[in-house]
Length: 407
Image (tube, rainbow, N blue to C red; front, side, top):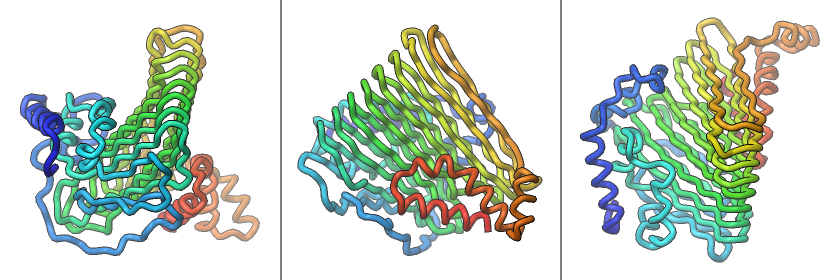
C-alpha cells in the first residue's frame, strides 16, 4: 500500500512479524485435514510469477451503482454510477487515507492477523473494496467488484470491508474470475461485513476462476440488533477452493442466512466451512448449502452452529445436501452443533446421494434424453439456493453456468 497511514503500516509490520513466529501449517491439523495448506499458498513463498494470459472478462449484465476491477489484486479506482449522498464506494487502500475515521476501528475487527491465513492476507494485500452505506439510506443498485488473475503474479491478495449503518440497505457483489492459466496462482481474500442495528445486506460471492487458480476465502459477517444478512456463496471455478464463512449474531433479533451452491467437475476440490455463532438471544440463523459433483471431483462441507452461554431463544438450522453424478466423485459432509445454553431450537442435517432413478426414468419415459434429464434434475436440486439470488440477471447467469458444466 503506497502512502498508507502510520497505523496501517504498523498493522502490516505486525502481520509480517506474525508470519515468522506462528507455527507452520502441516495439514495434519484437524481443521486442515481435507485441504493441504501448501496448495493454498499458506506455506512457503507460494507459486512464482508466470506469463500473463490476456482475456476479455465479461462485464455485469445489469446496472450497478459502482464497479471496481482489481487485476491481480492491484488497486484501482471505482467507476461510480447512481450513488446516494453519503454512500462511499472506494478502493480500500485509498479509503485508509480518505475515510480513516470509518475504516480504522473496523478493519481487521472480524478477520484479524493472529493466525497464519489472516496474517498472510493482512501482510500482503494491496488492493480491495470499501463500501459504506450511512444510516437510513437504501442503495437501490448493487455494487460489484471483479477480482481477476492473469497469471503474471503467483500470489494475488485482496480485502473487502462493508459497513451498513443503522436501518440502511445494500447489495454487494464480489466476483472472482480468470481465464484458464498455464501456471498456478494462489489467491487470498478476506471480507469483513458489519451490519448495524436494523440494517439489511445481501452479499454475493461468485467464484468463477479458470483452471490453475487456488483460492482461500474468508467471509465474516456481524449482524446487529434486528439486522438482516443474506450471504450467497457460489463456487463453480478454480482447481482448489476453500471458503470459510462465519456469521455472528451480535444483536438480539438478528437474522443471518448463509446460503451456498457449488458444482465441481474434473479434478476440482471445493471445501466450505460455515459457522453461525450466536452471541445474542432471540436470534435466527439458517445455513443451507447444496453441491453437485461429477468426474473425479471432491467436495467438503463442514458446518457448525455455536450457541455459547447467554443466547436463549436461539433459532438455528443447518442443512447440507450433495448430489453425486457418477462413480469417482466424492462428497464429505460434517454437520456440527455446539450448544451451551438452554431454551434453543437447533437442528442439523447432511446427506450425500445420487440422481434418483425414478426421477430419471420419469423424464426419459416422456421423451427427454438422458443428458437433458440429468440437467433438469440437477438444476432443480440447486434451485433451492438459486432462488435466494434476488437479482434476476445474476440468477440467470448462474443457471447458465451450471448448465454449461453439466454439458
